[in-house]
Image (cartoon, rainbow, N blue to C red):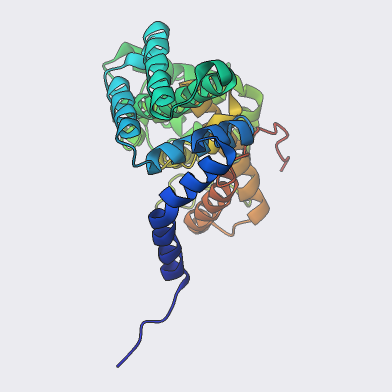
Length: 335
């Protein structure tokens, strides 16, 4: 009879089970000895930003208190109906949630004013992140429409930002390949990420114009540039700026949806994260991926997937730290 080998995953599952089982006892003991509930200990003991907000979120998720469960459900419902889009409505919703928690945890408001302020701030960041996920998903699910004048204007603005002084001969032209699209009409390249891919590119090209153009210039590098297509080998060596950009949109989208970007988002702003913060994360990925690609000195485009995956793993490792705040270092390596 074969016995199942003990693995790290099995040990982790065992520890998680015992923690879940004994968690109420541990919490009760700590409340008795400190006279503070878990949320208070987090808000008073953890630094502002990722450590505190992530701690509050995890505590609420693991809570078995039916009133806390109701608070979570209520806030989720408010996000789904767009309540956080109005500053006044958002304030009312958060005040009600905090009041419920104060009553449930038997916390005296007059003695713990700072806790009330800190908790409300954490709730705003937690559900602000969920609102951002919805906003990003809306852009991703909106396909690029060449009949939509706003979409077309944005696309033409991207060309103007990256190729100033060089006019397009026609709307459909191989000139688009000069900035890294695959064919004569860029709309086909946006199919996977919708208008989110375009919005990311336009933000990067507008807010970090000189850096974007410098990275685009790597297309002329004789050894480490990308090919026209990231999927198939072609003899034309090019740095597919736009295609790689859309790949990085997909990466940023996954990091956001999987919750990996929470540490950064909670640390990068004292308020709730916005679309601009997501675009900033994307810009960070673009700048750092460019450096990483060049440092790896790839033989050819067939190494793209390997290098992209390695880069993503490095980013995920950084984001696993609750104190992480990803900052863009503008200096781009000359090649």
